Length: 172
Image 1: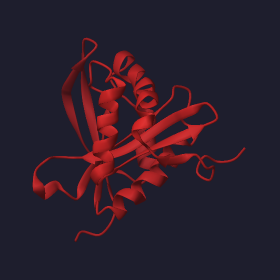
Image 2: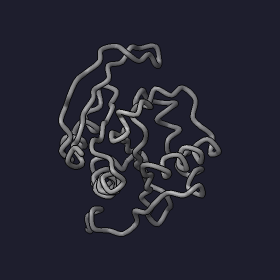
Image 3: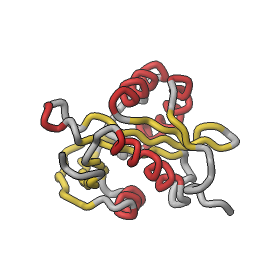
């Protein structure tokens, strides 16, 4: 079986991918605390997010014979100017795609694109517990940098959030 790291099928996202990305993301919103959003964004809002990410950062999709199977993006970490070389990154995969190389394949494409656009540090924010996401980020070289306790409330429970970071290039 080919590794997803060498298989074609990862490309820049376009607004035409918005409905597929919204559908893939919706169960994370409705069924988990992995994201703290409470209402799944409609395709129109996802299209706006894709467009915004493509302006300064990046948004990519992983396709297979059935369509979009996952996506990853970088976006603004904080709006103050001093943070302009730092971005926040996320990966979302179709259910059943975890721990099969798709997340690594997406990050292997995304992180260099962000570095080429001048990003120096990538930040990942993960609701705990989330062994799969923490494992992915550690495997990609992210360093654990802290945990904020009980900062998000979803599905009747308070959740901790872990932060990790990866240096993408030299400080300039």
